[in-house]
Image (cartoon, rainbow, N blue to C red; front, side, top):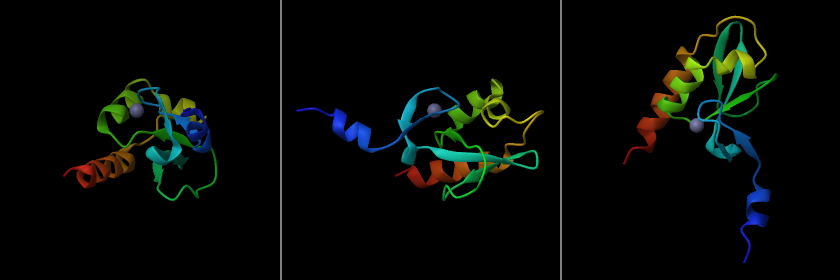
Length: 96
Ligand SMILES: [Zn+2]
């Protein structure tokens, strides 16, 4: 019995908030477009992507440590309002 085969089958990414690794499908892809972080729900937007758990704790951590500009290789601050909306929406959907 080995869970390794299964783990290898799904690509992992690191959450820029809590820095924990998770399956790509469990994370929200974020790209920078014109000074703003934009949630890429379909994973189709071009450019560098940052991955974040769709949770406000992870978003807060990422904002506090300026993880988005670093991960996305962007100079200056990035607006995260759209990401926050997406996170809040996801959290609302996940609630029972
Ligand atoms: Zn996280």
